[in-house]
Length: 186
Image 1 (cartoon, one colour):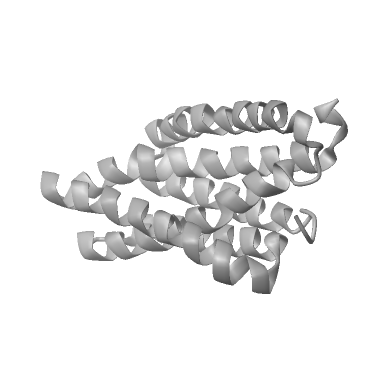
Image 2 (tube, one colour):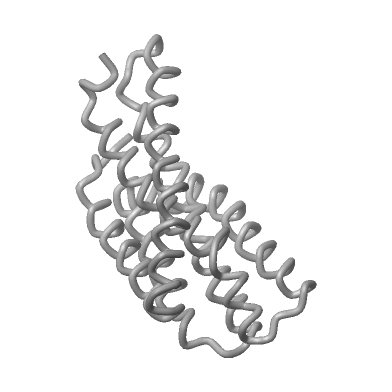
C-alpha cells in the first residue's frame, strides 16, 4: 500500500543519500580531519555544535521562509548545494576557524533539506498510512547513516582525506541534482 506512492520512495532515497553525506562528514570524518589540522578538544565540540545549530536554525528558516518562496523541490536542492559546498572545500582547509564556516554552511543545508523531504514523503498519503510511511522513510534513510561512514572510511583508508571528502561531496552534488525530480508541491 504505502509503496504505491512514488513520492515516498523517492523522498526516502534522496534522504538516504543526504544521511550518507551527513554521517560520512559531520558525524564521521570531519572531527578526525579537524584534529589533523590542529583542533583542540574544545574546538571539536564547537565544530560539532556549530554544524548542529546551523541545521536547527535552518529547519525554522526553511519551513517558514525558504520553502514557501522556492517550493520544496528547490529548497531541498539548495540545501544539498550548500552541503556540497561545505564538504568539497574541507580537504583544502588548514584553519579550524574556516572549518567552522564550512560546517555551518553544510549544517544549514542539511537542516533546510531534511524536514522538507520528510514532509514530501508523507504529504499525499491517507492519514491511516502515514505512520507506516514514516517507518519506511526512516528505514531507508538509515541505510545512508550506515553506508556513509563505512564507505567513506574505506575510501579514506585507501586514498586519504582528500578523496574521502571529494567523493562524499560528489554524492551530495548528485543528491542536489536528483532532488530536482521531487514533486513541486507537498
